[in-house]
Amino acid sequence: MTTLAPRTADPASNRVRGARRRVDGVGALTGVLWAACAVFVALPIAALIVLAGDGRRIHTLLQGDVLEAALNSVVSATASAFFAVVLGTTFALLLDRTDLPGRGGLRLLALTPLLMPPFVGAIAWLGIAGPTSPVNLWWREAFGAPLWSIYGADGVILLLTVHSYPIVMLVVSAALRRIPSDLEHAARISGAGPLRTVVAVTLPLLRPALLSSFILVAVGNLADFGIPSIIGLPERYVTLATLVYRYLQSGTVEDPLGIVATIGVVVLLVALAGLVVDAVVGRGGHELDTSAVVVERISLGRARTSLGAAMWILVLLITVLPLVALLTQTLLRAPGVPLAWENLTLDHLITALGSQTALTGAANSLMLAGLAAVVCGVLGLGIGVVTARTTGRARRGLAATATLPQAIPGIVIAVAWLILAPRLGLFNTPWLILAAYITSFLALVVQSVAAPLSATPSSAEEAARVAGASRLRALIDISCRMALPAALSGAVLVAVTAVRELTLSVLLLSPGSQTLGVAIFNFQQAGAFSTASAWSLIVAVVGIGFIGLATRRQA
Image (tube, rainbow, N blue to C red; front, side, top):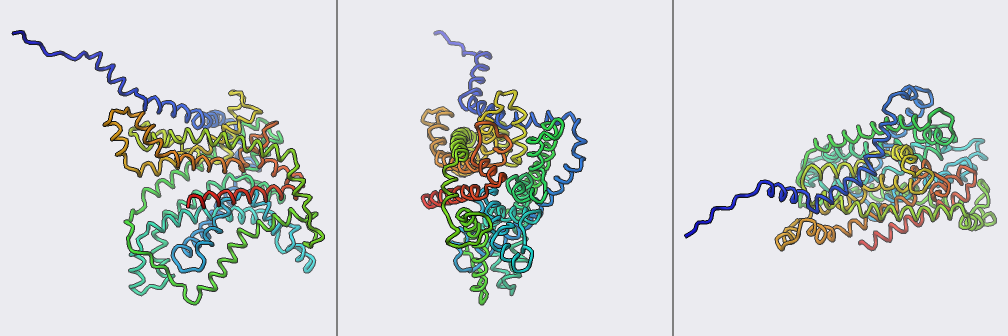
């Protein structure tokens, strides 16, 4: 009887099989996604740091115009963030915690400034408080001077606040839903009044959300271009964003790209510092178990009707009045003429719709926005699925890299791609704007996919693995199909955001690549106010209508 000796494993074959397991389809997919993130995120940021890193232009940061622009940016960003937090928190508390009448309609209207591009809002508000607005003209005739002109620092802060408070409102509303109503109910039983309950219980629990929203708004407003350029520049109120635009367009300084890169790195460091503070605050917050008790809304008593009326008036002034002003500016024969039937005309609207410059810009915007939505949708779906369904350091690093641009101001991304453009053959092409769009908006799809997928059990993928499917096949057949609706929603959000974008486009403008936002901005700067108002009205109405239709269909 022959005894067979046990078969010894070949170390070499074991190493080969181990390498194959490590470098499977998922590993290859992760590598491809890392390469895409390296091209669209890491490469432009690295180019910016390299150009500014030699330190030869640090002295330019101490020049008078740079210091003045930096101070103006800090003041407008922090002041508008503070007022946005106050206004957004007040709206959230009234709509989510009181019996204010008409809360549903008020909430929808209060969020509409988020759907209107800031530069369009700036043009609209010129018809309300500009030098030739009906109010200022009437006041000038009665008292010899305008009531208030929106041009200048106070106008910039006001409009940044108006376009930022919906972000605070959304953040605070989400935080309010996580606060156990038992705590507020216990305070009311102990004898505390409604105001005392809000001050002593609700606001302390909202502190992390308030600080987080303040940082988010301040960082975003720090580099806003549309509002300071339209409202601030006529009064020579210069911010870093408008200073960068002047340096790149006028050529009044030596080595403008190097100086702008240095300014961009400083803005980037400020934004990243804000991101770190936000992360630290988020980790240090207290986690509370939400209560199953139905939220008991605070009764406003006798003040319910008057406070409701005041809320409706304020929200209508903020949201509907700018649209009415745009319509008025579009229909009046000339700025400053009295609002009467004989002075109304459709000529400006017809001229705007027949403008070849604007039509070309609209076509370019639609093309670039569509391509950005497709690329971001595909990459975002892959990154979101890998982030939510795999483990390891590569996954965490991929997620952090893909979402990093969300904390980077637009002027920094634009300058970074300007540095790379000549080396990649993208200079004076529309593909430069497309690359910047992908860098800026990729995180929108990644977050849309990763957040809901992470909260979904992975039992279906495990069942597919048991049935013999590979890891890659399970991710494609199960996870990608589950996440596809979220990816499509994120891609639509990218398209809507990109089609009306201004900051990136105006800095990366090249012959033949003008976008609609730049066309409207140029009309305004050239004095064609009625044409700019007409296209602004079209953009505002179409944007709000599109979002409203999408929201209704989802409901």
